[in-house]
Structure formats: C-alpha cells, structure tokens
Amino acid sequence: MESTKTMGAVSFASVAMALLQSLCTAVLTINGIRVGIGLAALAASSIWAPVRAFHRDSIRIPMLTLAVTGALVNLALLFWIRRLRARPEAQWRRREITKKERRSERWQVAMAIATLVLVGIEIYAHPILNHGASAF
Image 1 (cartoon, rainbow, N blue to C red):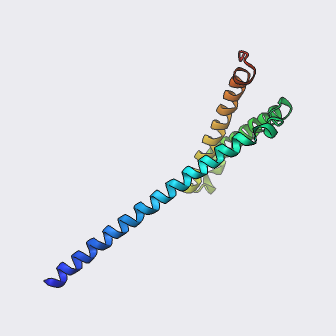
Image 2: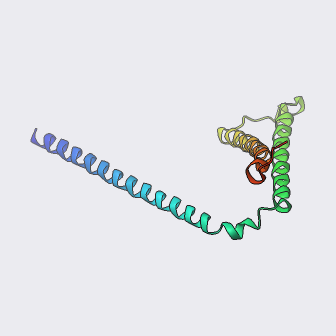
Image 3: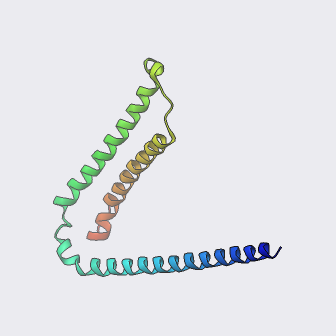
C-alpha cells in the first residue's frame, strides 16, 4: 500500500517537473522569436536604401509575370492530371490516390490561387501606395 502512494507521488512529481520544463522551453522559444522579429525589423529598416534600387518596374513586372505564369502552369497541369485520371481509358490502371498525394495537390492549388490573388492585390495597390495615384 505504501509503495502505491510512493509511486503516485513520484508520478505526480514527474508530471509536475515535465510541465515546468515545457513551460520554460516555451518561454525561451517565444523570447527567441521576439528577438528574431526585432532583428528582422532592424535589418529591414537599415537596408531600405540599397533595396530601394530593386523597386523598379523593370524588375517588378517581370517577376509578377513569372509568378502568374508559374501559377497558371501549375493549375493547368493539376487539372490536366485530374482530367486524365477521370478518362474511361485510364480506369483499368487507376489506383486510389493516397492522402499525402491528395493533400499535396490541394496545397499546390491553394498556393497557386494565393499567388494569383497576391499578384492581383499588388497590381491594384502598387500605384496607390507608392505613387499616390488611383489603381485604374
């Protein structure tokens, strides 16, 4: 009977120490993240002048074009793959798509759509924010 009480006390003490240790780890991690954010903000504010040279239409527009092209090609390929899988000729060799493959395809579609949305926002907001003009 006494060994059961002793084991219960040891188990409780172990859980309490593990909880304290995980709290300590969480606090140290959060502090590290805060320091990283502060250093990133400091670096961003101090390097704006050299980076400003890259903020030109001759660099921005080709990069936006490349992003849109990549997103559209990615969407086209994913929908082409789905269309090929659904064809009657492919039914004999069709296999079930794994959860990992399905998740990967959904993630690719979401990222391509997010890219298109962000490029659209950039095209709309860039003249307003940087040149003080209306978007259209």
